[in-house]
Structures are given as structure tokens and as C-alpha cells.
Image (cartoon, rainbow, N blue to C red; front, top):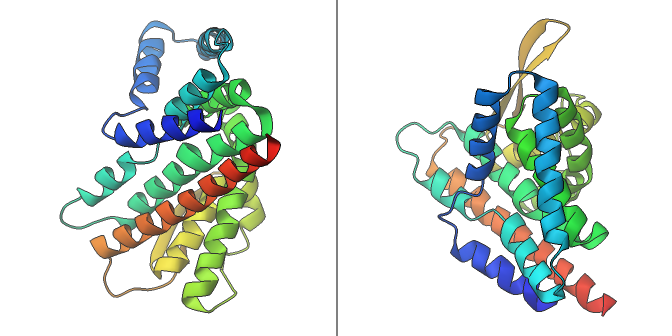
Length: 255
């Protein structure tokens, strides 16, 4: 099993040019074009997810099951290409969110659910999360928020230690929104800590009770450039390597 995860993760990284979100995008386009009732769309997604999980459950080999799981769920390498190819004036907060999302959803969440629930349920959970990223539906939004709380907390804790080491400060100002974000926007806390690490401003639009407003987090920097993005990508890869080592060690201890 351990060898399967290692080879699957390695092949996933080698195939970094393949956009693993494309099947979900095509599925959403097809469903939106053919089905206009939102409940029927959810029913269609449930059928497709159930069918894919049934096919996966037919795999009897532990090595093959682990290999396919890692290959399908690990999705982080294309983040570097997407952000380093930006030209001209870079909107850092968009890049920062992309990197954070890839780290949490493309790496930490899959490994967390594989270790906790096994291959089949991790496949199920990540299918739901990836569909929810594209589908603007209350069910998927709620489900995604719940499923991403613990992986985002794990990421936040590690990023906070990076922040302590680099900035020699304890306080990260969440503007009193840490718990709110944790429930309704789990990845936002990750973005805020990252903005503090890089000492840049991060802007987030809120819409509560029909009143829209923007909050600024992080610190001030005279210039936001590609160096910031490269630095955060390096931190991203360091954290993923650390988490992956812990994941493999946990598997070896169970053997």
C-alpha cells in the first residue's frame, strides 16, 4: 500500500501539466446545459459519484487501490505554472488563494481523509469537494465547508509556525473573524496567515445582511511581485513534503 501511494503521488507530480479539474468543469457544463432544475443537478451528481465509487470499490488489489487514489487525488504541481506565468501587474491575493487552495484541497485534505477513512471514502469526499468548488449550490457549499474545516486547521497551524519563525511575532489579526471564517470560509484563514507571512495586504469581500464591504488583512509591502509568489510556493512545497512524510510514517506504523 505504501509503495502504491508513493508511486501514485510521484506520477501525479510528473503529470503536472494535466488539469485534473477539467473533468469536473466538463461535467458541470454538461449538467448546466441539459438540466436547469438545481435539485435534478444534485441528483445527477449523486448518481455519478456513486457510480464512480462503485467502480473504485471493484479494485481488489491494495497496491492498485492506493496507486489510483494518490494519482487521482494529489493535485498541486500545476499551481507553480499557473502563478509563475503571470505577467505584468500581479494581483497577489488571487495567486495566494490559488496556492492555498491547491495546498489544502490538492494535498492535505486527500492525505488526511485517506489516513482517517481509507481510499474509498477519501475518493468519495474529494469528488464531492471538487464538484462543490464549481457548483454554486447551498448543499455543496455547506458540505465543502464542513469537510475542509480540519484540513484547513492543520494547514493554518503549520503556517502559523512558519509565521512565528519568520516574523518573530505571535499575533495574526483576523479582524475578529477567525471563527466565522472557520465555519463559513475555512480557506480564508489560510490566506490571511499567508498574507501576514509575506507582509502584504489581502482583501476579502463580505456580504452579510445585504450589506457588502471589504476587509483588509495582512501587512503592508512597498511592492508586490513575483518574488512573493515564488516564496509562498516554496513554503507550500515545504509544508506538503512535511505532511507527506508524516502520512507515510503513519502508514508504516500501522503495518
